[in-house]
Amino acid sequence: MKLNSSLHRIGNDIVAAYLVVTADGVTVIDAGLPGHWHELLAELGSVGLSPDDVRGVILTHGDSDHVGFAERLRRDHGVPVFVHAADAARAQGGDKPANAKQPMKPGPVLGFFGYALRKGGMRTTWLTEVVELHGGETLDLPGAPQIIGLPGHSPGSIAVYVPVADAVFVGDGLTTRHVLTGTTGPQPAPFTDEPEQAIASLRAILGTGARWVLPGHGAPWSGGVEAAVTAVEAAARTAR
Image (tube, rainbow, N blue to C red; front, side, top):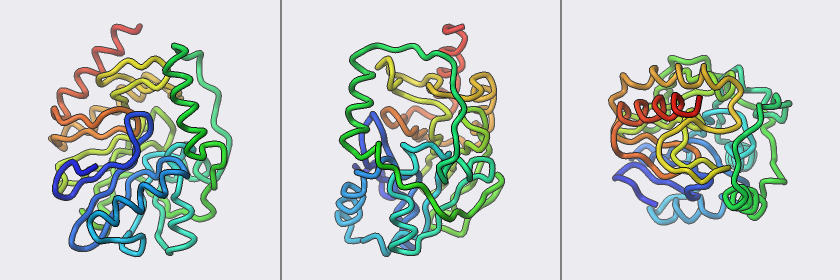
């Protein structure tokens, strides 16, 4: 799915990953599930490109539904994979802490886990090599992505701001569709290690002024970063 001249999405509102396409090549942000590989090839092919045009993968965090096809790109095409140092072990198959009890509705839960199963979510190939980030970097990749620390969902969660796309990619820093309840609109994401820290961290992306706020789960948000953060904060207060 093409969102603007340099911005593409693969996957859907259950699990998504993104491509930034420029004249210098492609930056992939998050790698979804293993089965999204075929969608990656199709999306690249739609603009006359291939995996050999991918210059880097940036993971917003190290959970399995964001690691997806990253190792395949690294192993088979020599593409470096960037992840925050605090999530490097997680992206290589390390343990994830147990979260508090989550609100759930049967339909959305079955939809999420069914989709993940169909897309190879039980067959994660963890990374064997990563390039560690620490926050504050501007990477020498297509779109000159800027790394913003966004701890809370996980210790090494980040946001990625790409000015040429007028977009900030937030991973699970927030969601626009709760995968366990089906509730839509900007709101806190489930399976978050430190929920209060995750909400507070969102203030760090306000300075981007980005039009597009792109989560790993849910519809792309084009109403601007300030409105998205305000909505998440309001949803968090209501849920308390």
